Image 1 (cartoon, helix red, strand yellow):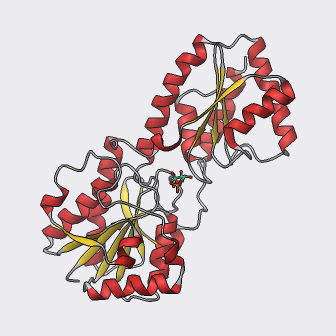
Image 2 (cartoon, protein in one colour):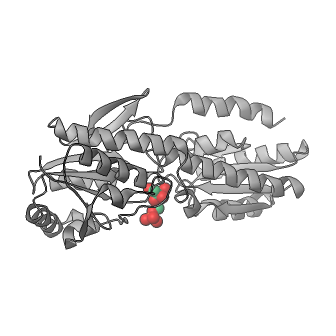
Amino acid sequence: IKKIAVLTSGGDAPGMNAAIRAVVLAAHHYALPTIGFFSGYNGLIEGSSSALTPASVNGIIHRGGTILKSARCPAMLTEQGLESAATTLKKEQIDALIVIGGDGSFNGLLALNKYWSGAVIGIPGTIDNDIDGTDFTIGFSTAVNTGIEAIDKIRDTAEAFERIFIVEVMGRRSGHITFNVGIASAAEQILSFENFSQTDEQDKLSHLAKEIKQAQQNRHASYIIVIAENLWPGGATQLAMQLKQTANIDCTACILGYIQRGGSPVAKDRILATKMGVAAVQALIAGKSNVMIGERNNQLLTVPLDVAVQHKEKVSESLVSAQENILALTAQ
Ligand code: F6P
């Protein structure tokens, strides 16, 4: 390969800049010119790009967001969009494309394969940690830390007012952020896909109300429920309203939202991104394609892209069971 391209796609994640930097510096080390496409796959379709040199990635390792900008790109689901993307890659004489993003971005790469014969490599960059074949995705650790910091602050008000809070965290349809944030902030309840889908809505509501009332009787100074987005119809706000209507329990809903996506990446994300960025370039040089760079037990590896997007890996049972065991005690 003689020339490579890189882009960031889907929800931005802290550490994406560190990954771009590592790709560019590693490519420079192997004397491979690199260009960056802007705004995810839109840049590929519209031909919006810029050459990336070691100077262009100087001073970005600590910055959140992505210097290449990002977007979700529905056009990559159309034949016309894919053809335009392939045309740009041919015109720019790109031999290999590295995409930093989540499952939607990897599906874009898989689709592009049918229209372009260059090599493609994915780097998992998403706060959700919902990619198979890797223990962690870039951005997850920072998002969890941000969630914990926020809940530590909410806890102060919760205690001062003896108030119940329902805090909604991101994660799309997976509970990695919910469970990790919930456990590390000593949440009294964690409501996520893994532990809250057995019974119907009314049963769940009355069960939850019973547990809260029990805690109130035991004079809990504060009570924090961490809930996964997309779990309860209407989210935290609707759940708070239903608890009031059905059990006369006053709760304050708080949606953490996009603060979890931004901010300076923690050490773990900067290091993971750096290792993965270098490994992506080395994988290309070794002739690999159609794979994602992952890390298992501290060992870098490659995972077929179509395996990475399967969503078979769930939150570890040890986390779910840790919470179940602790919950029995916190209710007392
Ligand atoms: O995938 C990252 C993520 O922040 C999810 O946690 C969330 O569900 C989604 O993106 C929000 O997407 P958008 O930025 O398109 O609103």
